[in-house]
Image (tube, rainbow, N blue to C red; front, side, top):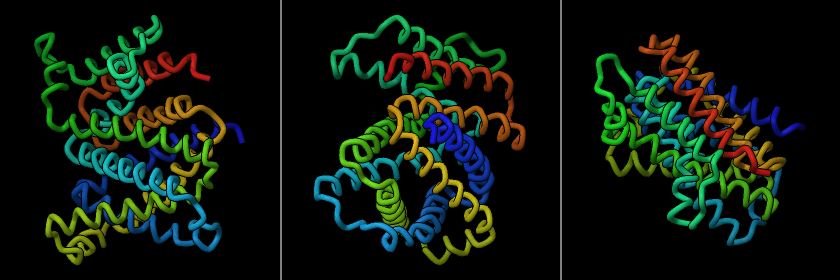
Length: 293
């Protein structure tokens, strides 16, 4: 199947999941929701060991799988924390800054230089972020201060970095180690559940209370679990066929879908302005990645 079609399907499924997630997060905390949805996803994944051999992978592969799943799990939790505390049309577009942030970090860390199109992409990212934060009667530099010093934004920027590393590991596992996507998803879902369960235990929350709170939200959690499995699987399928950077660029169009429909549903403020800002951020990713092959 065409990688672009798979990545586009992943974007639509991800956007739908994000909107329902925001609804559930009015009733559950980010950690409670992450544990419950990861538990349901793990239950759905239990068929995998009976379908493919999940024990034949090498020790090196297992370490990469565990490491990338830990990073992905914490990234998922950070996104849920951001959705819990911010409007959906404010939180999600910042996830699209990953290509620009990666390009900037590559300069001091890897000694790479930025080309003219990359500077253009970074400029669009800055403009888009400014539009997301700009409120009426604010001083001209205040939106940048809000981005830098807002604790709620730290969740998203932390997730951006963790997702970038996790996605690179996905490409390594699929292309270099030739691991079945189902095996990756099984270990990922298992580790996510262990991470969130451990955090609940560490925080001395009652598992019984968490399950009781989630009972009324179970239909939504079930739908989110199915959507999550579907968008992760289609993203991995696209990653097998195309460079990870291009797949992620297409996948991030989910930000616009979720921001528009979610913003309408939850009556977010300044929605047209935020959509323009989100579109600029998404465009910045495509421009920065324009010559990736």
